[in-house]
Length: 448
Image (cartoon, rainbow, N blue to C red; front, top):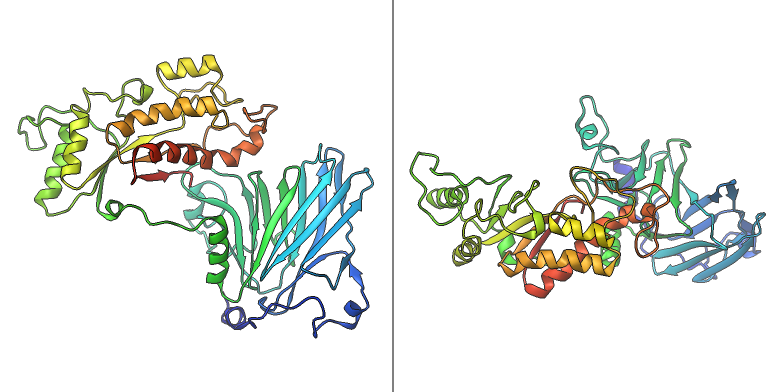
């Protein structure tokens, strides 16, 4: 960020422009002139009091349909216009001002056949942008630390596909600008951002789906932009106290006959788990969480039917009680799949996710939009909660998931729309069942 840009952002006037009867209105505005752009006015915008959204369009199989708007310089807190299009659709554009922020919605009647919506936001030469992802550049996480990489937190000059990529990065359709605004695109459909790449003075936004809805925030400080969006999305809550203590994790557990030093194993629990706990205690390191990754169950992948493999983890329930007596909790790995007899039953009942081809791992995924399929999977998770498990690593849900094709999930949505929606559906399903058995628990979703 350039210092002069930061100063303008922080020191911008606090008052929101009063659009009706504003003393700063131009003579043209007072005469009621209109323009082919949506203009959002706020004195909290740095370097000016307006943000221009133009280049509006929707796309069908027949091509791009530009939308011409007659937007007034003066309007009240709400603006609503219906536009007759050449293909006989009626496009409706709505703007609702909420204090310093603006809700914008674009829809059409009929909306069948609409594949995408788009617009552009004007950008200044020294403006920078940040957000959208936990990576330096879009794509595989290896690209972010590739040799010679010079990009930092500024997204200017980048294109970002808003579809949840495999592995660990959060992708969220929310970015901040150094001009004092932030944009949040609502909904689960995939989208696309182009930060001054194809046009140096425009941020281009394109979003799939039958309608397009976004919120534009304005504030004089970046933290205020983040706070406003966080309160909309849902503020964080305080996790259980035990989550803040040291954790111990192993990728795989083996039940051995001797400890590391050759001493015979005589303890009642998994040998590696006991050695981990005793060694931490010997070095004065408190352990508040013991996390067992898969395999912890029977079967080829080690989690069939949500049952415990007692040969690998002997006296599992007593080991959980042992941890609890020592102020520690048990955490296990889970995934949004059926395995074992549950897989056989789920495929027979059609509880699997449509469009996912058979594969050796991460299969079959649960169709979480089907109440019966979700309940069947939750019943499996409940087995572990009833054994005293205090939390889960919610792995996967963002890889090996179908995203193209003619398939629909149980509730009627296409698998394309389900693509970004699936990880939070997975988290919600786990939260629901955990809430039935515990007052305090921790869920760690890999796909955020």
